[in-house]
Structures are given as C-alpha cells and as structure tokens.
Length: 227
Image (cartoon, rainbow, N blue to C red; front, side, top):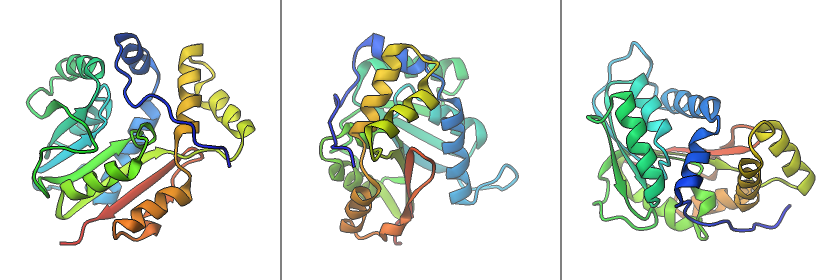
C-alpha cells in the first residue's frame, strides 16, 4: 500500500478553483446524486418531505446544483473553507437559478457552530482526503445529522501501488491539463485506504460495513443515524 502523503487542505486560489471547476466531473457528480437518491429511496415520482442537507466541502457546488435539480424537496447548505471555491460556486448557483434553495457558508468542516442534529442529512464528496486527521470531519458530520437522519460521504481510495495510481490518472484524467493530472494524482495519494476509513467509522459507533468500495477509485460511507 502506498504511503499517505498529505496535500494542501484548502485549494484557495482563483486559478485552482477555476481549474477544478473546468475539469469534467459530470459523470462522477451524476453517480453521486443517483446513488444518494437510491440510498434514500427517493425517486422522480415519489413525494417526500422537505429535507435540509449540509454539503461538506462543496467546492464549486456542482453536486448541490445537480441534486436540487433532481428533487425539489431539498434545501442545501454548501460549506467550504475556500473563498475562491465559494466565489465560483455562487456564480454556478446563480446561473442554475437555484439561489433560493442552495446557500453557501464558509466554515471549517472539522468544527462548525451548528447545533447537534441540525440537518436531515450530511453529504460530502472528496473532501476527506484533504484533512490531515479525517476522523474529526467524520465525527462532525455524524454529529450534525439528525437522529433518524443520514450521512452519505464519498471519497477517493488510496491505490495499492504507484503503478495503479498512474493508471488511474491516465484513465480518468488523461485528457485534462497537466496541472489537473498532477492534482488528481496527489489527491489519490492523500486518500485513505478502505481499512482506514472503516476503522474510523467503527470508532464512531457505526457498522464498518456501511463503508463499501463503490468504484475502482472511490469508497462510500452511507449510513442512517439511530433515531
């Protein structure tokens, strides 16, 4: 297994934010939204009560926009520590016409001011690998989900070898600019292994089997919080 090498916790320059937003994440984002709705049992013809969701590490808000577009019964707070990312996110939300249902907040995902159980559910896509001590974010996500609510967190899984890392970069980022390829490779090496994330989830009182590999480069923690 490759050694975990940390990358910067926050991508906070306008250049990094624009490069990230210009990368083609559409398939990954669509899979995230579809898998979340399947986990919640919410379909296009199924009425549901309004749900309030926190998106931790929202980046440029592409996933909240896609989710709000799929189901009208949600309000989303997109949170990120990066001003540059939130600046781009605000433009994207405005263009999508979703300023009434997708809001933004700058905060540290390791410690927020929200009350326990403030949100129906907490979701996050590829933020955990940015955190030097990921358990702090996982614990905060679990705290913020309401009793009977849920957490749905997805991130990269660290490859077994440098050869596997290079293959993943070539497969999923080979058509992107060199800077984007470098950023993706560094993210893969900063990610957790499946055993590491399962151990952390178990320490929070959740079944470690609620974490599963969901692609050749992702794990997903999908769990309901006890009522």
